[in-house]
View (cartoon, rainbow, N blue to C red):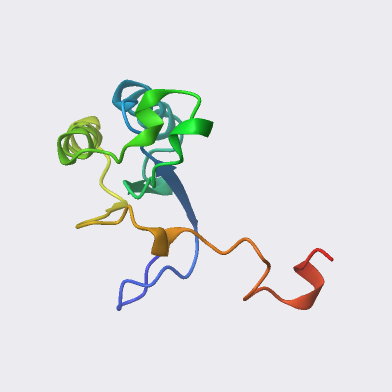
Length: 114
């Protein structure tokens, strides 16, 4: 459920990240999620994948960002599938600022590993 400001106050958001070159797989997962849960869950269609270093990438596609065309294909597909409750991202979201520090900063003490 969303309040009058659009802030979620109850329910489930499934955050689905599109990987470069993987539109088909992502669309199949969207179909499965929507067929199983319908509008009982919100789908967050994320395009913020940030490329990893070529020397550690298991495939060449992972060395690049998601193209606007790939993301648009996915969003259009989700709409065509009947997804009405969801979120999309706009603009450049594949930036290093989206990568958490992985050092435990910002977490309560009991969640930090030491």
